[in-house]
Length: 570
Image (cartoon, rainbow, N blue to C red; front, side, top):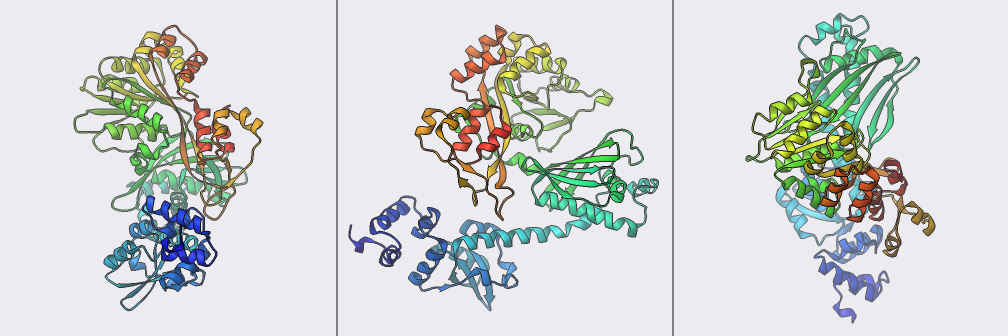
């Protein structure tokens, strides 16, 4: 193919010796096929370095080339930072002169982006070309700073979370808050900062831990505990009292565990709850706060990380008019989010949905949620019995803990109701044998349970710094990969660590074992076969276990082999 067929930018790249002619033609064809600008394709495919791409683009389009390292952050016009637009188009307003807005771009051919910023700002837009990697980092840094700034004003709101009369109760405790606003203010501000830091850092839990000569605060981020602060040990009792006041506990009682709740309103449309538990220990009260973010229940099934065939099985089970769907896994494995995702799919005006939870973690509009209270006799079993008198279509039981609850749930599943629940077992096959060990007849298990999901949460590799690692073939086979896997030529990555992540990981993804109770598996259950026999049959029918599902995530480059070894057993 002759050079004249190349576009202006592609031709310039060839003329400057940055691309071979054939490679330039192939890149053009691939970009056209994907309906994307050529420069975007070259950058994403790493065919060109961002610095070289910026220089060539500036020459081709006659724009100025700007180095973002020399940018004064104070010059960025905050009024023109529309997060949705900037993330969608990967552009950033960097300064304003009168009615002219200078827009940093890596690709000036994106006229749709320029028009959108012009329309949104009402200003004349002039583009300057910058390196894409620096631009993306600037966008994240500026928008994160804007988000953090908007949260700084929350300290005053947090101070108003106390229950009415809480200060009076606090004054009766010699070691708690003094009742003097000036003396208590540092504790209030410190607790506020810790709560906000935990939310900003993406923590799921906070631990306030007293020891003989130290006081430690830890956050659980991406499933791993990390030390966040070590305040003076003398603050221990005051901090415990402050948290107990905020969560409406009895601060005069330190001998027994207590449960409470803190509601933190971040904006008019978003609030975050903290589920709080206090536990008397040798050197004082340990408090654990679980962060309950309602937005996590609205993620949608596509965000959970199911493989396509697993997602199809999940949706198929939800569409059935009756039967039981069980989700199993250890504490913190994401069972609640999976249950709420299923409930959101089922939550229509035609369905009467009731849930019994201990406690209710996230409020869902349109669903009748009941808080289990064993002290007054409101157990899971009692709630279930009441549900069945209220014409339910779908029932969710937070956890099947005993035979009575299991029997009522099974009966509901056999009499025209869809039942969702959880158990604490290690795998899907073990869930079925666990029900039998609890005393549920094998026939009832085989005829009521439709689907069992076992799950874990694994840390997701950081896209910015993950790097390929070479592992010998014998070792891969020993770890569970097959010859067919190796024939596909996948790449295994390992964590490195960079400014964008922690220890090479950023975020988490689900690893699932989804097992449908087929006629063959039901027959094994009725013959009282053990979990090993059930697991073998599930494998024959094409339902991968947790380990296999984890290896698929490794082959996809989403997580590391070390992480899958951590969360699944061989």
